[in-house]
Length: 402
Image (tube, rainbow, N blue to C red):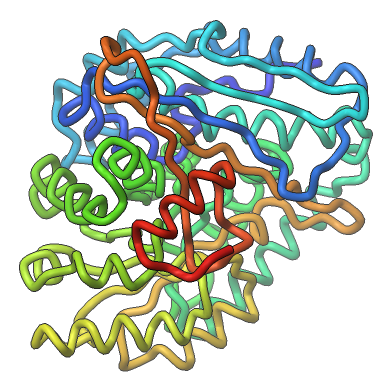
């Protein structure tokens, strides 16, 4: 079995930007993460052992001078000290526990310093996804030439429809080759068409470097979830926005708001934050209903919503993105982050419905106990965390039950 991850920056930009914010704001915080397969899939015999071997191989992957030079050029909002940290960073297999039961169900957990474990999530998910297709033999039916043509056609349709879009598909890609093919097709399409839309880049830093594109991304739910575990969910968004703005001082100004739903975020989203952040990202709920809530909130603060960016990223495909774009024009500045539909779309191969989420946190290593946390998005099916924690957070936020 070949080594699946071979490049340090074969990862989503938001993991690096969050890692930087974590070191600056929470350098001693300890966390736990847990893998969830939402489809309760049974994995092939021996899968856990090969996954452990692939994680051990991550210890050989270090950042290169070329990768640092690229990030310095494209990500000038990242402070220079962070690259010294990345030069010294080494993956550590002992932070990860992997097991597989008799039915083949997979369990994966991380535990350790937040700054050490945060760079594991996307890489381990990408390994699990690609490894599954290899060990089941489904990778043999993946025709990359056909995939390139179909990807190019997706890009053509989006560009001709006036959509501004990017690739967000690292975590659940069919393979590194598939994502590389997708990004190449989108760049080729963008360069050959003169339509009103455009392909703006990819979340994958290494592929952005390889194809001379802009790496895109800001933050993920885990930043808010960890803060909620430490201080409670009621003010978690407020604290997260304050810490983020203190770290990046106006850069990376798209906020992912739905960790605990719209209602509590809206109460935390004051005029200073609304002016400071250039826009919001919709990652759950009905897209048009969420847009209406966003518009109303901006108007209540005396801000024209048409001047604000809204990034839609909730389980999109080309048709949905075009529909949303047609309805959102003039109401906001719409943009689209498309993931699995871009990087894992092969006939007969079902994409993995997998996530790794932060589930517990303690402020420093000296604390004798962890505090559990969870995510409560606008879609109940995207709730993560154990049942008791979810109930406790729902009660604290005066939200409807499960």
